Image 1: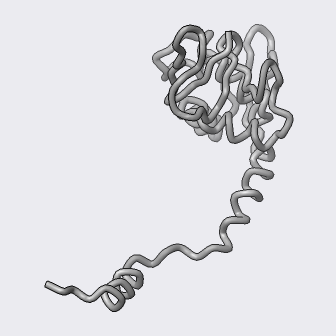
Image 2: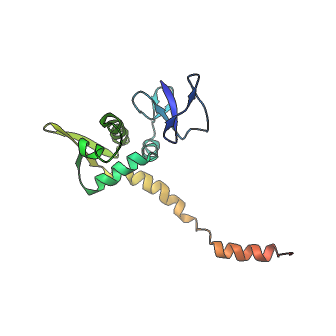
Image 3: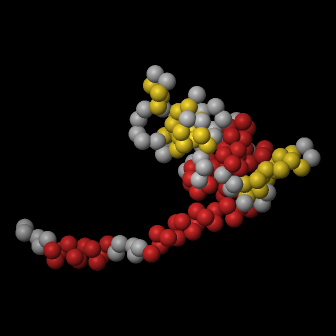
Length: 149
């Protein structure tokens, strides 16, 4: 089953996705990020941004900033099943943002900060634009649109 996750909900009518333009097509069975019918994302940057689009996954990455964590420890603060957290970890892993390894009987998660390098470079390219200065904009509007009242 394929649908679209909009605001963290599956939205379907008569088996077809409906509603606003989806930001992140998701395979409802395994949570894989999709670009078309059963095609995983080919652009790693798309996979990174898709993984970062979910607040649960961003929270997991923040937790892993401190240190490596066992999957059960990652799941503890969330009000969802271990299976649901494992799906989130799988998406983060496929995006290259974390790695998972078995140590004895425990599966551990480790943040891979270098995976964010390309995303960071892409975002920095927008830094060339100056922020809008609202005070200066307000003064400009006051000059251009004098108050007739």
